[in-house]
Length: 441
Image 1 (cartoon, rainbow, N blue to C red):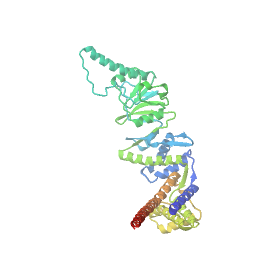
Image 2: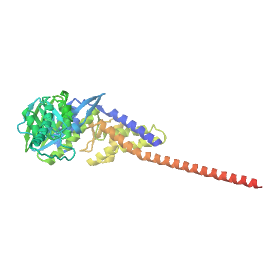
Image 3: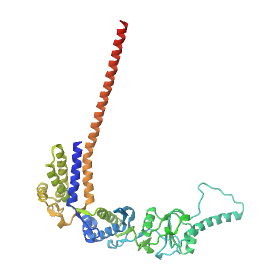
Image 4: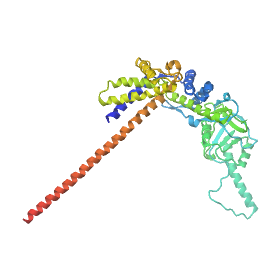
């Protein structure tokens, strides 16, 4: 349809305008990144600790980001940047660990609690004798048979531990259980073990230490051993023991340790920190910023209104509709600040018509201000996506209308075809009857 095509053209022009008024940012410049992240948490609970939160968010995102080839980066903060909340202490004690922290303790009291440069083996199998898959009954008639059964179980566990000890590890971490007998063999060889670790934590340990998670001990090779961890230690914080795998050479996974007076405050800090990390991730993906405070929306509105004058026919109306819709953001900011929407919006529109594309609304005072001076910037990726989504949703009813019109036309054509068939059949029957009447004469 003509209207949908006009909306698509308006979308393309709007994206070009946003790209034009945006500015690049150096993601390696801490000062610029702090200014950008702080604008996203300036009105939240953690605004008092803005510098600390910006530092935590930026450091965590930089640790988990890495190149995947082809000029692309992977920044998976959901899987590899874990937030651990421990009530107690002060908020200023929060920090980012260059490794992984687990809420786990060693399985045997004689195992080492501090290991420097440990050799780490990660398993996804139990270090226990294998039980029957179905119910098994054993009838024993002699005492030697009972001893033989226990010996077989011991031999099976020893075979598994020997396969692990052949690679000379310092630390064994498994997602399943570790039997008492396996603990005995490991302690005897001065090896520390952790059991029943969550799958997500095991994946982060593998990424931080360079180890490979193995499903069978018989499949272990020297290349599966992780050697990039600098320090393994277990500390008691409050009433619980925590395992730390830190000082990793190239971690690629991290743990953000949050401290605070209560669980409610820690939950609020976590939500604010997630927002800050998302902003940092978006900028690393697309290192450009667009002015905030409604400046970007007003710039798009003014430019599209000017472009609409050069479009002929019905196609100029979608341009005008998008331009009018874009003014909702600055108008809402003005209303929330208590100023007159008509007066301030008219001044802002005139400012952008003169070329001031970075001018927006001060959310506190409700006056015009240059976003360069105020320091309010938004990630370009977010602006582009919001404009795309808004216009696509606006086109959706027209797509439905187009489908319905197409179906109606097809139904009408089908009725005409049926009518043609019926008419042809009636004519044929009338012709046959007239021929039969002529033969009788």
